[in-house]
Amino acid sequence: MSLSNSNDAKASYRWSQPAERNQVPILTHLQSLLDENRHYRVLEIGSGTGQHAVHFANALPKVEWITSDLKENHATLNAYLEVAGNPRIRRPIELDAESLAKFDEQVDVIYTANTCHIMSWEQAQAMILNAGRVLATQGLFLVYGPFHVGGQANSEGNYRFDLSLSQTNAWQGIRNREDVIREADAAGFSLTQAFDMPANNQLLVLERRRD
Ligand SMILES: C[S@@+](CC[C@H](N)C(=O)[O-])C[C@H]1O[C@@H](n2cnc3c(N)ncnc32)[C@H](O)[C@@H]1O
Image 1 (cartoon, rainbow, N blue to C red):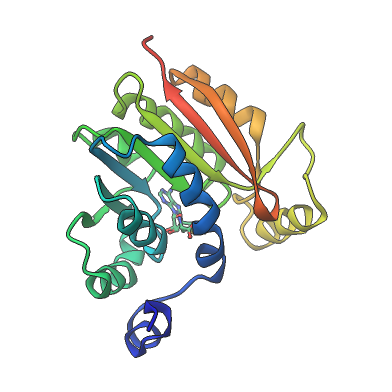
Image 2: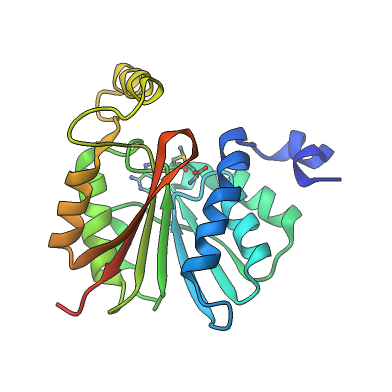
């Protein structure tokens, strides 16, 4: 029985269909970006339901995955991690884009999915800047989600999604890829790869330079 179909799933934690779909192609890239023989400590920002943490940590046996999110998401996240029972996944720490600056553990990778358009642009800028402070040279900052390109939506679906975000909360909206890359450059990152992903999403691979 899959976790998503268990009674626990319905009773105690939220479930995201998009996360269930996109975790498969994202994992394929993680498997090619990370050396399977090396131990990695990954910090995830905005873990949400915890599905990505569980799917990736289960498939990547050398990875220790640190989940984090705003306090309001910890109950569902904890409930799902309890059911998943993977000792390499750390229970959520309370962290947002700004408090990331105070994170003082050494991590090799910072991973965040579908967060840049949910937080304000100022918070997204803070997250990028602080990721640059936290990550050591050659650490990877992996940013997944929808992005506009050249100020334009790359699909009708993303155009409508952006509109619905800003109509619901004025501070939300799909970010321009160039703006994210520019902020990342200022924070000490170089874009080494960018992958087009299903449903018009993208995976940006940013490597911390030796600045
Ligand atoms: C759309 S959900 C994505 C969840 C998960 N990463 C996924 O892809 O399924 C956005 C997440 O960003 C988190 N978030 C919102 N504002 C944030 C902030 N300022 N700092 C850190 N995380 C934030 C939310 O709590 C939520 O878990």
